[in-house]
Length: 94
Image 1 (cartoon, one colour):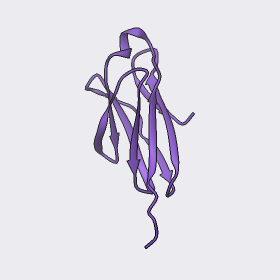
Image 2 (cartoon, one colour):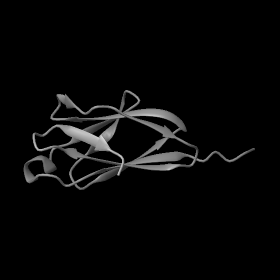
Image 3 (cartoon, helix red, strand yellow):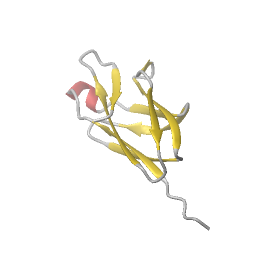
Image 4 (cartoon, helix red, strand yellow):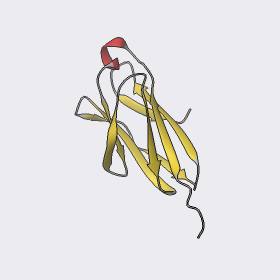
């Protein structure tokens, strides 16, 4: 039986501004809540290979634009997130 290698998406939140640092971001992967993250933390999410949509929510009301990823079997993807100067969440691939 062939070995199935899991893929991971690691999301790292930059420390950001002091007044936003301790407020949680909610991480959504493929329209399901996957966890929360604060400034300076990272979260490793095991995923299946294929297409994925990731968004983050800040302050219970503001969603980032979605980030679409294609992940191959056994691949490690790294994503960074923070807030812009107005407090709107954003995601990018460093």
